[in-house]
Length: 212
Image 1 (cartoon, rainbow, N blue to C red):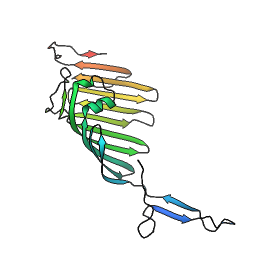
Image 2 (cartoon, rainbow, N blue to C red):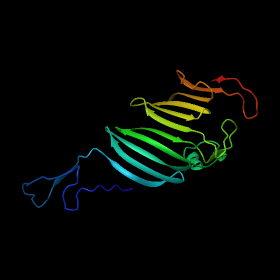
Image 3 (tube, one colour):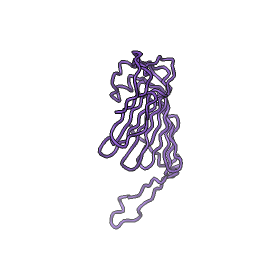
Image 4 (tube, rainbow, N blue to C red):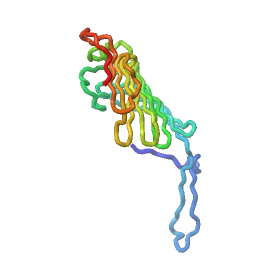
């Protein structure tokens, strides 16, 4: 998509945040007009941007706050479209659409974000405790934060059903944890941990806590 930036107003003057200057007389080249154009405005603002994403409507607002760009977005998404985009397994077990919202903070080419949804409108045919009907709310939160210039952390929380944290570095995943039920969701010192603390599976069989 093209981005159009107005540099002059209707009267021909420079817009706020725009500096236009002429280089002045040139020896033997006065027939060529050279000048300088500088964009000095450090803020950005956009209201009610609309579009489509993941099979549903999208609205975005953008503003500058304390040296960073803040993006607020929201809309509805088709869970099948989301599952296909991120190559999630067993996507045929998910149906429906749900409302979502996101807050994104951008500073120095780094973006931290939070995406939240109550998943009302989405049904799941996974075994318990991941099964749900479309009318049932189930809070989902996905968060990305920069730990430093080379490392990032992702957190995913699905109410009290499941939690996961992943730390990614220059060489890939450094450590991660996936916890189901009341499993301990603390990151391990290294490697990947899977911890399960559920009273029973969908079959009704009781299982102990597992730490891998």
